Length: 189
Image 1 (cartoon, one colour):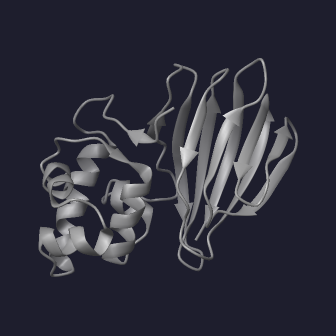
Image 2: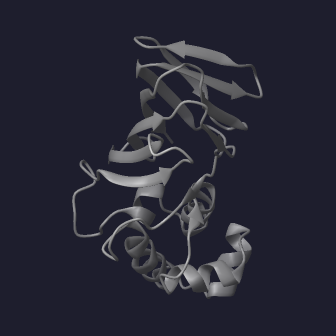
């Protein structure tokens, strides 16, 4: 149900990378915490907490922070010492233990392309916020059934099928079947 990235692992997890990456990128951009908060339309308190490693954050807030810093999402969440082709990090967990999102890797595109592995437990939903103009997603379902509700219409994708759509609109993923739904997501920005 939530789109919040939570720390489930030891402090060497993604949120620890967010903390150090955010501080490093903000300072490199010459921005104060207040200036970054205004530019990204998030609270200064969130930035203070993130830099201190003391908070959970929504994926959409990380997107806004990355945009405000002129970097991509991967620059915010990845280990800065590791290659981005193989990130393999948990970014989201749903209400069901079967619901999980992993950012598998990223390669350069116009800005970047991100490869994700997702699963949704029976009855679980992930509510997204619109991406910036020009962004797209490609979803391939390899197990179960996923419904994508978008402003421009809903689509249901069964195992073995796919959908490609512009993600600069409100959308959500829902498990539309009786078993765990597993799918691959590619975000192109």
